[in-house]
Amino acid sequence: MELFFQNKIFIITLTFVAFFVAQIIQKKTKLILLNPILIAILIIVTCLSLLEIDFEVYHEGSKLIEFFLKPAIVALGVPLYQQLGKIKKQAIPILVSQLVGCVAGVVSVVLIAKWMGAPTKIILSIAPKSVTTPIAMEVSKAIGGIAPLTASVVIMVGIFGSIFGYGIMKFTRVKSTLAQGISMGTAAHVVGTSKSMEISENYGVMSSIGLIVNGILTALLTPYILQILSLWIEL
Amino acid sequence: MKQVVIILGCLLFGELVVYLTDFKLPSSIIGMLLLTLLLQLGWVKIVTVKGISNFLTQNMTFFFVPPGVAIMLYLEVIQASFWPIIVASIASTILVFIFTGWTHQLFIDNKKKTQKEIDPKV
Image 1 (cartoon, rainbow over the protein chains, first blue to last red):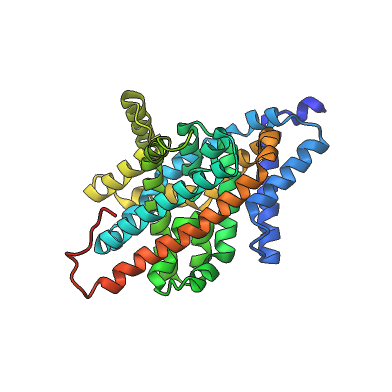
Image 2: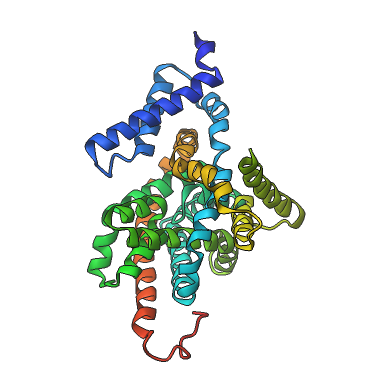
């Protein structure tokens, strides 16, 4: 039986079932805190420990699913193309606000983590925390971070942002709807964007622009931002 | 089948660029930009890739369940830096909201005034 549980088909089926159940729980309860990814991870981790399956074995088996992350990012080219008109119309506000958001995100998280005494490997892992998981993980790998740690921090940031983002912006007087929408995508990526979609299509579209543009900028700039930062602090 | 070839082709191009130039950009991002360019040039029609693109982007969250589980392999490292990770990520996220929101809003307020004065370099 033990060998059966190490079967790749079993591992992949387990992952699908866990996510399916997680989606049902989310739909039934409508609680943002019960994020499907988090619940699915909890279900899988519980099953793995109960069945005494090694995490390494699970990791090997689930690589087939993880493979799809890269093609999924390529596929984001389609919504990007569809938003091009809107992006061109507001090219400067979008580019500049995204640039500011990207730099603020990377620099502040690195400085705070460093100040609190986190080791370099951890700092590198959380540097790209504002952008969507597949992109963040790729960046993390490229700069020498721990990609799975990046994934969980990104998910946590997304959930936090989607719950408190609009409150934070109200409090700090970000009034323009366009600015609110785009910031949601910049700071809280896909999770924030789906929250914006719930409010209105307009917010949703702006959010997805923030998500994509900040994703690209973060992928492009993070290695260089870190290089510049390493002139002042030890990384 | 054609759509799979297009998506994977773009990705492979990205991999090739990374391999040849030692560019620190994820291959998938290069692939995404290439796909956008091909659509913009009209070399690839949006109807051709619409199906697979919807499938991939709508199920994107599912694909990162396995990397999420892989976190268990790093529990010790994370436990050691639990608070720096949490505090830095949350404080930084709040800053991103404020900075992005203010900057974007600034432009909308200034739109009616002269645009020449705006320095896009920041």
